[in-house]
Amino acid sequence: MRITCPICGERDRREFYYQGAAVALDRPAPDAGPQAWDDYVHLRDNPAGRTCDLWFHEMGCGAWIVVERDTVTHEVYSTELAEKAAR
Amino acid sequence: MVKLVAKAPCEGLLPFSYGTVSLSEVTYDSLTSVAPFVGKSKAVADVFKAAGTPMPAVGRATGKDGQRAIWFGRGQVLLAGLTIEGLEGLAAATDQSDAWAVVRLEGENADAILARLIPLDLDKGVFKRGHTARTQVQHMMASITRTGVQTFEIIVMRSMARTLVHELEVVMKAVAARH
Image 1 (cartoon, helix red, strand yellow):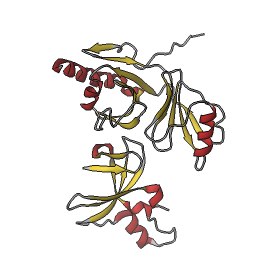
Image 2 (image 1 turned 30 degrees about the vertical axis):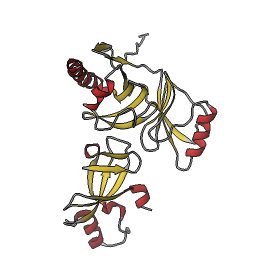
Image 3 (image 1 turned 90 degrees about the horizontal axis):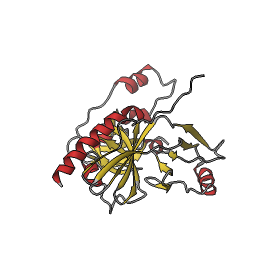
Image 4 (image 1 turned 45 degrees about the horizontal axis):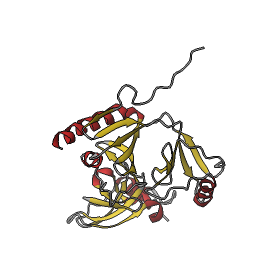
């Protein structure tokens, strides 16, 4: 599997650390209530198909990257710096 | 008073050579990371330019032997053997002189040796002189810069100096045996 780092270009998957679903970029408001926070902290979808993950270019430039990919076909649709996706 | 003697990270390990390729240690007087503050990249680039060493773009290194500015990751440049004044308020400059081990791999087939250790296309048509990358050497995070046609400078964390030398030596022997 190859992932295109928006900074470094296409790199081997080994250079990246997988963090999980990109929910950290969509943090609930402090007063959103226990249900929203329970969802945010503990509950994850497990889609067969398109999913957005956070990957860390650990062995490379150190950027956090949002990767949109397909869990069935392993196709990578797009990658974007997390700092941009969060805006 | 006790007089402290600086010990190089690869002291007692290098240099050596196998076949056409040699491995030696590079000792820079200082290593300083420069991380521009948000919105200050342009101002930092101006300071670099005024100091005579252009700020390296992503994946590039500027300067000359013994005095380099190396792109070192997202929003970070490593000054090797180089001091640039006037960065106060523009960037976080951190002394890292004792934190990294720097080695030079030189000679015909140097790229063939690295091809066995690094998951990156280092062909001279793609990874040219003055190009640099943050990548991995086996399991070690590293910075690698092509400083000549068959010359590379490799930087790893100082704690991994012995491992780096070992990994390179094994592969240097193997490649020398095949040529």
